[in-house]
Image 1 (cartoon, rainbow, N blue to C red):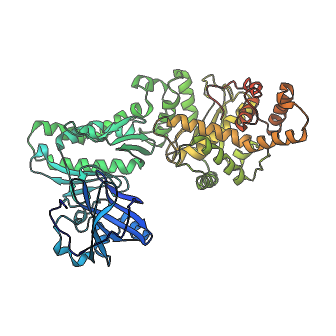
Image 2 (cartoon, one colour; image 1 turned 90 degrees about the vertical axis):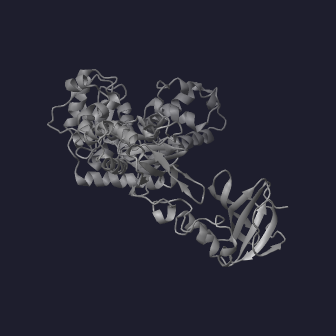
Image 3 (cartoon, rainbow, N blue to C red; image 1 turned 180 degrees about the vertical axis):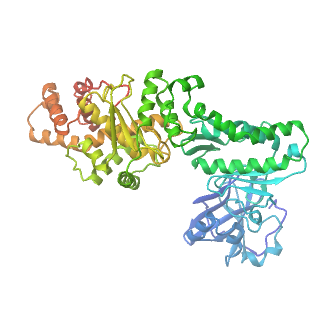
Length: 581
C-alpha cells in the first residue's frame, strides 16, 4: 500500500520499463534526483518528485541527447523539459531500482492542476542554478562575477553586523548556500567580519605566490566550506568540495573587490567604531599591497631586498619587478647575496625580443598545445609528446641530431651566457617587457659540459614552450593546464627533463637501434656482454651528440634488457636523485 499523501492523475498500467539502471545522473542530492535511463524503446528522463520510507516517486518522460545537452548548458529549465513532452508517467520505485506502481498521465502540462504544488521544480529553475534572480529564486540586491569563475549573489539585510545573505558559486558548483534541486537557500554572513578578513588578506591575494588563502576564513561559525585560492602567476588554483580549476587572477580579484566595495558601501553610514576601523583597512588595501609587493612576491625580507635588488628605476609591481620577484623566489633560498644580486642584474639587462621571434615561439607553442594532452597529470607522457611534436614541427627526423643553438638562432631567441659559481645552470625569462630569453651559466654543474649544456638549453626551451604561456615571467614555472595540485613543481620539472631527453634522443629511435642490432647479431650473446653493450651505448650517444647518462636513461626506459643485463647502464646514472627522464 502506498504511503504517499497524494494520488497521481491518469490510469495505472503495468510497468513498461523493467529494471532501471541510471545511464547518467544529472543532479544528485542524497541520491539521484534527476537522471536518464535507457530501454529498448528509447531514452528517458526521471525526476524524483516525492519520497517516503522505502519508496521513491518519479516523473518519467521520454527525452533525447539534444534535450540533455540543453539541460546541462542551461538552455532549458528542468520543469520545461518535463512538461513539454507529449507523454509522461508517474512511477514509484522501490529500493532496488524497480518500478512497482506506474501511472500513465499523458502530457504532464495538461495535468499540472491535479498535482501538489511542490511536486514539480520551480518554473525557470535550471539544472545548475545561475545568477539570474528569476531563475534561482533569490531576490538579490547585487551580483558579482560573470559565471566563468567566482560568482556571488547578495541580498542585504537590515542589521549592519549581520547584513547579508549570499550564494557563492565556483562556476556552476554552488559552494555557499544549498540547493535541493528545487529551491536555493542562501548563506547568512556577518559582513563586517568578512570585509575585515578580505581587507587584511588583500595584499596576499594580489602578490603572494603558492600560499593557500581560504575565503571561508571570513565566515563566522564552525560550518565552513572552503574556497581555497592559490596564486600561481596570472592564475588562481582553486579547490572547493572536490572542485578543482584555474581562474584568471585579475578577473577573480576584480570580482572580490566589487563584492568588498558593495559590503563597504552598506556600512559607511554606521557610527560603530569597529565598522569604522574595518572600512579604513579596506580603503587602504591598495596602498598596503603596494608597500608589501616585493616582500610577498619575492619571499625575501626587506633587509635582503635592500641588499640585492637591481637599481633600475622601476616602480614596484611593474613588468620588470615581476621578473626580479619570480627569480628571487625561485633561487634566493640557496644563493648568497652576491650571487643573487648578480643574477638579478643579468635579468635586468635582458631586452624584449623582436615581434617575429615571439610569433615563431608562439606558433611552436600552439603546435604543442594542439597535440599534447596537458589536461592530464601524466607529466612524463606530456614531455615525450611535446618533444615529438616539436621535432615534427621543425622537420627533424626521428634519427636526426638536434643542434640546439641552431634552433634558438632560427627563432631569434636571445641566449645570454655568463659565468658564476651560484650553482644555477640556467633560467628562462619571458615577461611583458623582457624576453623570451635564456640565461645560461657556463659554470653551472650541468651546463659546464658541452652535452650537459645541450640538455640544459632543451630543458629551458620546455619551460618557455609549455610552462610560461603568459602566466609566469621566469622559467622553472608551471603549466596551468597541467599541474597536479600536490607536487606541481616536481611534475613541471620532470616534464621539462623528459622533454629535453626526448627532443635530443627519441626513445623510439633508441628502441629501434637496439632491435636492429639484435636482429643483425642473431647468434651473439651480446646482451650479456657488458663490453658489447657499452660499445653500443657509446655509438648511440655519439650519433645523437648526447651524454652517456641521458642515453643510459633512454635504454632503461625501453625495457629491452632484463634486470641483470641493465646493471651496466645503471652505473652511468649519476643524477639518480634528479633523473633526466
